[in-house]
Length: 480
Image (cartoon, rainbow, N blue to C red; front, side):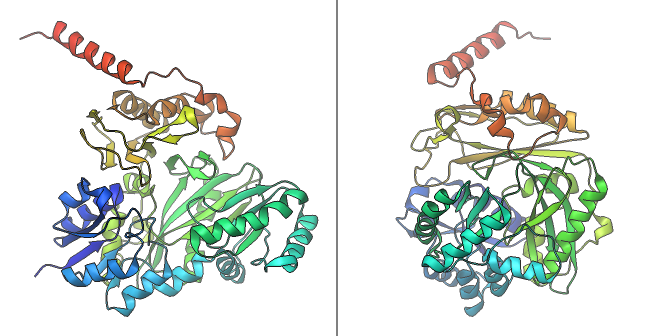
């Protein structure tokens, strides 16, 4: 019988993993909650197991996911990103039940998921870091440590949830009064989001570049990197546009960051795919942020510039295979950009458009174009989950070619029904600083006017454009 691998996720990442499983000749098992009854991942997988009505709670139910794997005879589980992907208890439950967890060992997930513990590991390895506190003790003792740290290093600082991830549990603190107010609130939010109310403080690096490095490590101890990515264009610590490789002109600095990422992964005893994240200031100092112990949303740009299938490699590494390539085999060719096309209204504080039906869906294509999504014409967007519809990734020989290709694709992408982030991205990529690669994490704060565009996304406008296009083509079609 063929090997079976269960995918403990939904949406585009579940489809991405299912395709890799099937290409390897294995059977893919999907899981789903009731709001995902129309999900493409169910139709694409070889088998599907209903977990419950949800929403979200069943995808997060470790016992139900493990039972689904046992019921179907799956010998491995790929967690994707989000949900249980960085939950050490889930990784441990897989190990305890003789199921292969496609990711690092549970002990590594646990140590790196605790940001304070991760900082301790990196400090012992000599990895450069932003000054920070240990986890703050509850009550007055922790507050005193926080106040003393801020007096020594100055404001602003970042208050972070120890178990945070994906941009959640992070807030900027500008003065002591705000510090006193926000710490109890942050604890309550962290407890609700991560079942862990621990928080700590880091000195804020003002307007840095956010640079990350994709690493791969096998069980034999070989660790390599697949180059850099720039994820600086963000909104409220959430990444919007991802680029590979980094546009930092100092290649020696980029190489040094990549070598440091490998050193950090080795210090943590890392196995499988992971991402080491850094901040780079105006003086070209770089600082360790964290290691994400999962596949990243933006892995597509690295795959486009290296030609390496990261998810396929993940599965093979988890099954005990050695890396099939060495560091010298990794060659970066051209540039790639990924944009996350979400069902959101950028002009209304990026309000999600869940519950709406996609009346028309027409995607772009062509050389150097990749789509990772689960939306289709007639699909009703669930309100319960993330608003991501499709990731559009483009690749080009040069940076300008890549941006031009992205513009063409965005202009040709038609989604009628919900409002989307497409018109917002068109504004961003036409900005001259973006074209020069001159941006950092403050880009959208400085250029907030990019949200001021003519809204041509109403139902009437979209249908009128579609009808006009059909009429134009009828009038300008000739037989030869």
